[in-house]
Length: 153
Image 1 (cartoon, rainbow, N blue to C red):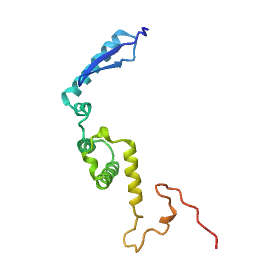
Image 2: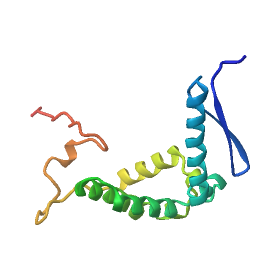
Image 3: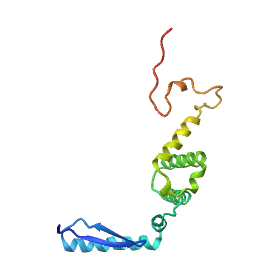
Image 4: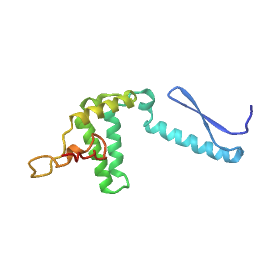
C-alpha cells in the first residue's frame, strides 16, 4: 500500500534504519531529509552513539558524560545539587553498578536495589539530637502518608 509519505533510510553500526519524514510534500521532504542526514553524520563523527549501539557503554562512562553535561547545563544550582545528591546516593549504596553495562540494568534490578536500600535505611537524626525524629516510626517505609495513631488507652 502506498501512503504518499516520505522516509529516509540511514545505516548505523551495520543496521538499516527507516525514519518517517512526516510529510507528503516532496520539497519539504528533501529539506527534512537533508537535516536528518546531517544530524546522523554529526552523530557518527562524534561517536556518542557508537558505544551505545555496540552495547559497551558502562554505567561509569554514562555517568561521567551525564556529569559533564550537568556542569554546563542551563539550570539552577539547587537543581544541579539535587541531581548530584541522587548520583552520590546510587554510587555510595550500589557499588557494583559502575561496572555494569547500561543495557543490562533492568527496572527489576533497580527495584531490588531500592528495596534493599529502604530496608537498611535508618531514620534521620537531626544535628545534636539524642534520638531520631520523634514521629519517625509513624511514617511507613517509602511513603509520605502517616500511619494512624493508636488512641486507645
